[in-house]
Length: 259
Image (tube, rainbow, N blue to C red; front, top):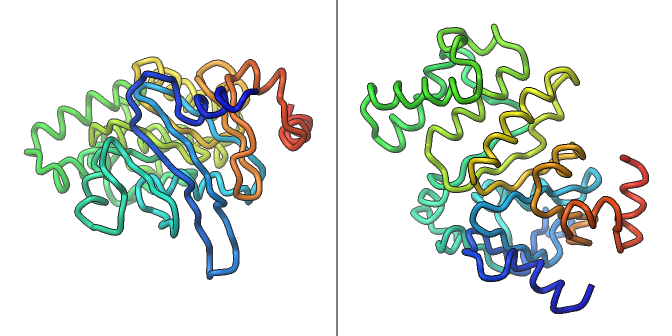
């Protein structure tokens, strides 16, 4: 890959609107563990980027910096034109535009499925209850669990709970969705139902950054696959090039272990 191609890849699709711009992001834990080492990545509107890498590579930490769940010490991050600083107003604005789905579902066990999805729009966006309820029901239908609306999280399977978590994130009407290993806590038979929802979401044009080891999903849905190791962005390419023609030795070794 030429330097020009590398630069174009780091900057997303040339000529498209950039919605995430991370420029030489650096992060340390306790001033001695260098978890992110000058990572740069640009994601364009409507793009689906899958981030892969071994445990401890920094991939989850990296995407968590996009909504200030993790702070970075050097470099810069801009989300939808807003510079992500320590300014609480900027952080609050960005978090309203960025939805996130975690490995653990983090649902409120004492609230019904419907109430879980309604909560943030009512408290953060100040929607009236009727509007929040109508949108929550629409989203639960969209993720295929409308019939579970009155149940509590503990009455649902893991796959159903993760679909509730996706609906809850979408209820804030985000411009960007982040997924941090959303299927890794699920039994194998439940993985597909969550990935199907993510495929539909990607097909709708949502900008998505997904940390996952689901190779089939990456091959089918991703516009670009990014590989991280030891806090570095080692390689990025289209799914075909990444899985069939990896250029870096470290990428080749990783793929030999998971394919």
